[in-house]
Image 1 (cartoon, helix red, strand yellow):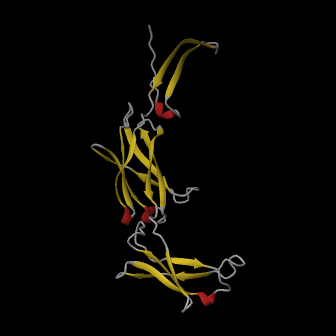
Image 2 (image 1 turned 180 degrees about the vertical axis):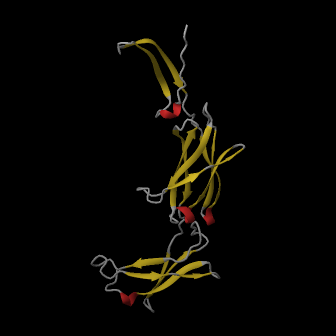
Image 3 (image 1 turned 60 degrees about the vertical axis):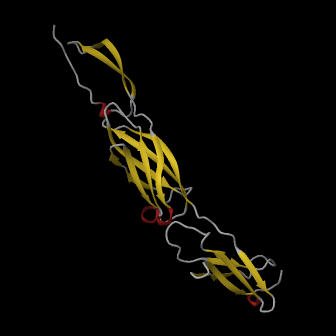
Length: 220
């Protein structure tokens, strides 16, 4: 008997899962009929574990590890999307580096995320050698500002107010270049709002500024 064969390239299809293969016989008159049908499965990529391994908060860097991801055809690559804003305006795609114990992503918020502070969502996507890609896990990396309480002292004789906060308690990813504060009186909303730059004192470990109260329209 004559035998016929066909090799199917799974990469020509869009997704893993259950597949159907039907064999049709074509007659000399042009008509055709199904002679046999078979089903087979293509296993999808397994989910893995995505964890933050280390973080250098002051430098705005972190290492994220992706592990436990597998596929019958093998994993070709893993990439990770990271962002902190609700509109994903600072989203960046990282290509993970493969090592013996997993895949690694080296985050850098000043280099790749506009130096935005906040909590970052990190989603890892793996692609197998068929070309299929799947979300395999996600985690969060926290680069939020560590705030410090504001201290205000008023000198009624000189009609000034000093605003200060501790530079030891205030922490930000990356170098902090400046701090400014908005000041206004309660009456008539913000019609007398003014901005002041705080000065950094290494000796007293504070950011502070004296505000002349005579610059405002009312007391209160």
